[in-house]
Image 1 (cartoon, one colour):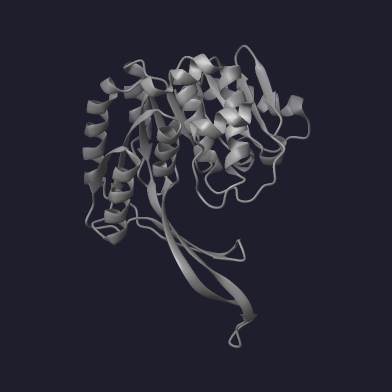
Image 2 (cartoon, rainbow, N blue to C red):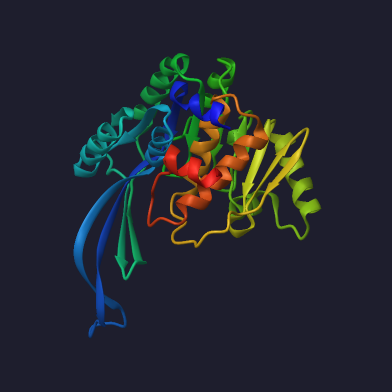
Length: 312
């Protein structure tokens, strides 16, 4: 395992998708509002973090990999803040500015270490900006070892089918974190990583592991995927390829917050696969990383040191 970890610094990944700014308002809750049956939060601390595809990129860098990020933001305070946070994190950002939109912001209000409320601000980017981003994507392909497409359903991956085609034509592995109930746009990808709810929305429910495996086989073959990874929260994760089925039980840890756990999983998988790890090893390590990150509050990253400790 250590030999693979040593290769992390040589890995070059290109992340494309919906970026967002995660804002946190932390405070104390000591009373209920007289105006409505809701808690009153006295805000004492503010925090801003990279969210969405930007959180995937942050996890890649935290593991020691090199990462370029391609996305769209608005010409606003949140967009400028994202630019600054990305620069501090050592991520090479290619953020296309669309003056007609607001940068996606997720505002979470935290009281007594619990999320009390989330407020979302978002607008879909324009077609013209997305076409420009697609051309930029094609230029950046040559300088990466693998591509991660992080779909949060915010409109930034309108040309995802073309991106997958271009990347596979350039012989680059493509990992997709999907969204929605139409997976046909992900056809031809190397791997997609739906969570249990997302997979059920597309393939239907199952009662046994054999039913799950059959549904996974049908979807994988229909979409011409090399592999399909279903993350199942407290039940761990299952990988399905043409040659094998791997089940990884969840790492026994106290779950504090599942925000961004999917970002950590796909980032870890991408780094491992680009470094030459086989599927079994990549999935095992990604499962350990997921167990670490759910023990943290909010969107967070897992460092290479934390991963080594978790593996030991």
